[in-house]
Every structure is written in structure tokens, then in C-alpha cells.
Amino acid sequence: MTVKAIALFSGGLDSILAALLVQKQNIDVTGLAFTTPFFGASKARAASDQISLPLIVEDITAEHLQMLKAPRYGYGKNMNPCIDCHTLMLTIAGRKMKETGADFLLTGEVLGQRPMSQTKQSLYVVAKNSGYADYILRPLSARLLDPTMPEREGKIDRAQLMAISGRGRKEQMRLAETFGVTHYPPPAGGCLLTDPIFSQRLRDLMDHQEDRNIRDYELLKYGRHFRYRDTCKIIVGRNHSDNEYLRKLSTEDDLVCHMADFPGPLVLAPCGSESLITAAASLCVRYSDAPSDAEADVVCRHHNQSDILKVKAASKDDPEFRII
Image: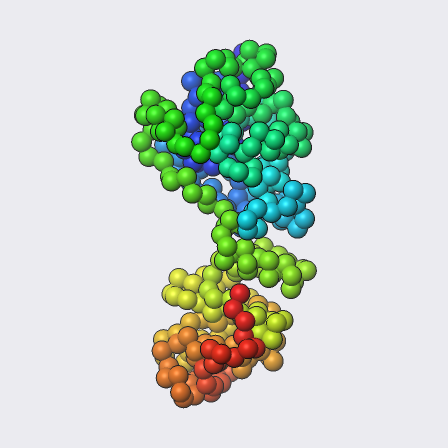
């Protein structure tokens, strides 16, 4: 009977090697990647194609956002709740394992590679709290960890697994060469929750807005973000790409401004009121090509009604505008 495994698969080198090590033992491996507003599955898709690994992609936004409100083990340096996030992923992977009749789970985690989430204690806590501790195999560090159920039951040969630890990459690169893996992304993470600027915006959103939806998180990715009078938010596009994304994300409830006669940004105040029009328009002028010492025409749309305002650029020293 064929042994089957579910691999948590980010598309990074470690997850590629973990999957290949298990496949090498004639085990049927399926990759599992996740998406949220903070990370996607593009690397996983590209890597799975490269090594011909079947891949399942699941959107876990609802459960991830719920966890993010109050992670049991707190945040890392920024807004990254790595231990709680990995626990959630393994819990969801465990459910998928049961649904599909797979025998065990595997991850590309390496003992000691990350100071917060990959210590021996952290790996144990994550596995235990997931509810599937004895099913979770870490092929790259397996011989440094206690044997798991698939090893004890002979579903996989522990002797053919690795004993890699620490932050170095030499062992992984040597292993990649033996598998003929030549293309893989750099080890830098792709999670926006580790980005200091994005994290600052996320903290601000959570502090100021209790009722949040997915669009609120998506908006954090684009433009310059301002708090006006420490209550309302105004977003100013930095370039054409930002402007297009903000335009696509805007709704009729938003206040949206753009220059009438000069190149400039798209400015969006989410669910903005009429009282914000002058403030939003003045930021639009400030970041446009209009003369800074004269009034300029700004087109403002709210609830499908458009008006043209003649305003001066907001001062860079204006204390009512706080950049996030």
C-alpha cells in the first residue's frame, strides 16, 4: 500500500528539499501552500512545477486574521506571530491529512535556523499545539529530533533523513546539487508581517478600526498612508502602479481625488466623509507636479458625485497630517 504525505510547501529551498527527501523513499507527496493578505503562493506554484510536485493551495485568511488579533505566543520583531502562524498551518494541514487519507505531514523547518520559531522548544510547542505532533516529520533535521510515528512505524527510513541545524546553508546547497535543483529563491521570507513599514501600518489599522475587512488589509500594501487629525486615514499613491491598485480597490463609499490639470497621485480616503475633501485634495496637490505655491484644481469623487476643488498643497510641516 502506498504511503502518502502532505508537505507544507512554501517553495523555498528547505521545503523543496524536504519534499524530495521523502519522495526519494517512494512516498507519494502532495504539497500544501497557503494564502492570506500577507503572503501568497506564487513561489510555491513555481517550485512545485519545477519538481513536478502536486500542489494544493488553500486560502486561510479567515482563520489567520482571527489568530492575528491576539496570538498566544505574541509577535516577533514586527507583527509576525510566527509560532502561532506555524501552529495554525499545521492544524489545517492535519485536517487535510485526515481528509485525504495521508499518513503523515512534513515541513522544511531546520532546527536552530530561526531564533524565535525554530528552536527545539518552539518546534515542540508548535507540533503539540497543532494537535498532530506525532505525525509531523522535519526531514532536514529529523535525526536531531525525537522519532515521529511514521519513523517508528517504518513508513519512512529515519537513517535516510538529515541532521541539519543552524543558520548556515552549505548542507542544503550540497543536497540541492545532488537532487539537481538549480533554481530556488533566496532565503528571505515573503511574509509582509515581517516588514517594519507594513507592520507599522497594520498596528495603526488595528488601533483605529475595530470592524476590518480583507480590503482594509490589502490597502496597507499601497501608497503613502496618513492619519489626519489622528482619526481619518488618507492614502496617496506613490506611482502609476499604486494609483491603479488604489483605483481597483476603491468603492463608491470612498473619497477619491486626482489632479485635473497636472500629473499626480490618486488619493483615497477609505469610507471618507465630505469633511475630508479639502484635506485629501491638499495632499493630492502636494504630491503632484503642480506649483507648490499656487492653488490647483483637484477632482474629488464621493458617492458617484464629482466636484472640482481649487486648493493649495498641504504643508509638509502640517501637524494634522501624520505619516504612518
